[in-house]
Image (cartoon, rainbow, N blue to C red):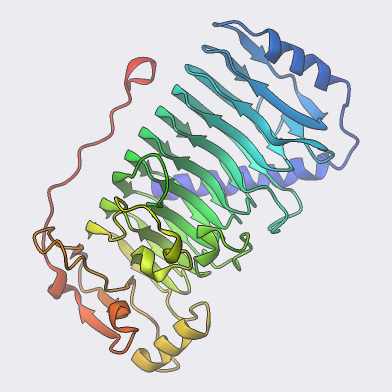
Length: 406
């Protein structure tokens, strides 16, 4: 199954490449007014059909009516191109519930490609977001960006070259992210300040970091309870091109799965390989470049109850990003060695001695690098998995409700 998913992703990208060549032809400028009018006049229950073609837009689109479906002819057939955008912060901004969007592409937006905010019962299916010039800091931050949403399904999408995250879920609840492909983004897939997310069947490759599970300060809600499983996370070694000062700008190139300041995260049954810094990183906010801005007194900066088991690791850790990590590798493994599959910054909340373990690892004989962050990295050490051999209660599967029920 995983091999089939990987092949499907490769085939999709080949088709994507063929399509991108077509978009060099002049785009149709006459459709903008038609679609803007359809979105403005939409009523609950409407299905807005996007025909086949490449359509040029010079300003943002928006929808604020519940119960609308936007449907194209396919992500390589119905292309909304914002290469000439001069107005608006997004390609398409949706502030609505009971919304479905499927089978189309959004390219080269000035800001985020598709943003959906404050809605429930959201389906995003077979949507491609891409900046066709490749990874650049000047690209928009987010590809597909649901925020402050509930009951969300993201499946079979493709996200390419976002300067922050290709597929992002923020401050949301009850989310399934499955069978997507994220490539050449800073963060391939990012779950941030979100409760109850299942992330599975995805391919994350050639990003700076493959899959991120973060908690950030100064937001409306924290997050917890994320399962990351049955994904292919490999060769995420693209140089970080994020905007300076953003959280993802601190992610070292070569990061597979990264957990930062989040609790109750399960990582299991994934294929994780050849991420040159580390296949898995677990860290607190103190190991990032924005810890001094954490601000909120109720923000918990420590990761806790991270359960890593039954993954398949290969390669990685051989060429970590940055002088400090290179020096760490040489000091602990020699110039020809590699950092272990799991890199942990070593921070534990001393004020909560009964909080339970930060890490439980049941993944064969893998080793853990404790970088000794609390002591200014004075005693970094490689530790065996048996030192972290414990089990945590497994999280239940996320069950989508209402019209999204499986």
